[in-house]
Image (cartoon, rainbow, N blue to C red; front, side, top):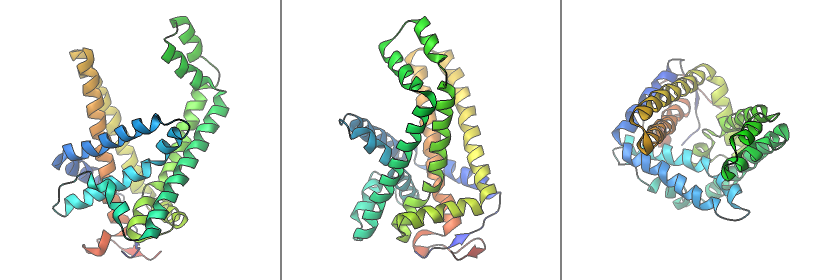
Length: 274
């Protein structure tokens, strides 16, 4: 696949959301299975002493690539399945596999740095809060932990930094696998595509955030009406579906910004060579 960087209209942000929802509704169970498998594998990694946290931080780029591979397969008439996780490692190109591992390592390091900055900001307040929740401390002690100086700022720094780190990684795994770019070049190309198409991506991200909040609120109200564990399961299930649709929609954003993988579709927008 030749690398072509396109400039798209602002309305494409809405189109990506719509296409992502439509594609997810075509195969909800396979996409749900992709995400569920990712969670189960990460839970298993979390049990590994010392290395578990590092390994968990390295896996999100593989999740993004798997969803884009599954969405591409679906668009070509195939049912998405768990083989999307294996496809990158079946590639005969050893350099691409190495580059993908390097990209995962870079993401893990960046996230760990972001979390460490959050710990410096809150002085360990969030860790103390989590420990208190695990030990089921008294309401008075919990109130003290919640009012700890720097807690809110530390959480905000973590969320903001990880979100900032994640942006250039949105398309980097696909650029490594489909285009054969080295990790630094893939990160640059991904960041450049988002910068050049800032308006559609702002609309895209804003719509997904808004949809997530609205769906969560509605589901939470329904869960309260139903009550019990079923309400929590309903909230978790619906939230997971929204997340899956969001991951699916990244394929359409990639296709419009960089062209169809393997060139099976004609370009639909003005293009500029990178």
